[in-house]
Length: 399
Image (cartoon, rainbow, N blue to C red):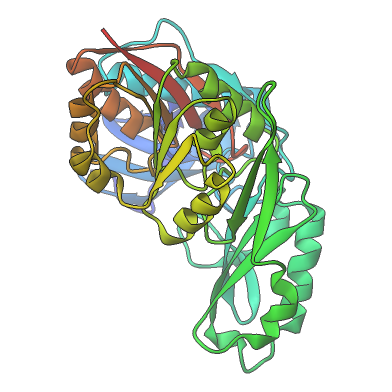
């Protein structure tokens, strides 16, 4: 068995979910960080069990032509920052395709189309951790703070604002601060923030900005949708791909009524309402649900909000005369067993699935396929460049 601390010479075979790359040593799988498929590396083992080991490449013996310098690939989840961006997109497409083939047992005919993003300043939402009055991301595998500026994820203006907040923290308050959540509008001109602190943080009031910010999201020829949200409400994180992804989801939706599950503040569902669809939007989170109700008020005849969990909604409400298209944008864990069974009872003619995790998407795809659905083309949206995260959109049609 491989022992922690051992140094291995490995040939990197292919990408694995989570940002590491797969290699083998005497038949045992080793997941290697700071590597690229095709490279020969010397790697130090971090931890190991009977079936799998985790290691970091510390010496690149035969570097890939796609390798590039990276300031600190461990910071802020930037596990792919050492890889040229076009190769990152290909790697993420391969991970999505592997999930459909290996987990869903539904091999894709080819790699999914990937929609790329500018690599810097893309991030509209961020949660930062705190230590001694300073804010930052965690370095991979630790609780050590690292400077968010080196990741390139945040706008320069955001970093300047963050520094001003830091220098204003009273010494007596520094130990009580756990973190900070930031939400910005698409242009980056306004932000709302929420401070996670054990003690009174009245000093933070001058930096917090408005309680809510508003974006106007345009989709096709419809009037832009006004979406307000607070710092704690869920919203997609990439300012450059937001409208393109919404337009793609809208294109997959069939004519007729729509149910938008995990609706957040209404990004997808209200874009459909703006185009004339009758939409029921379901959101159980308190903050997102409150913003959703305010946003849906602009469409009183077409948008109905249900502020309950998805599972509760699907248990209580079934359409008997017409079957709506269903849009789902679940958390990283995918659809719960109760949620997917409720959807299957509803039997929508089309289910549009927005996923932030290829493995749980593939797991749920297998269940849908077994229930009589077939999937269309899968499209990947790289909402978080340089990280291992990738968003996927795919429509399932009832056969």
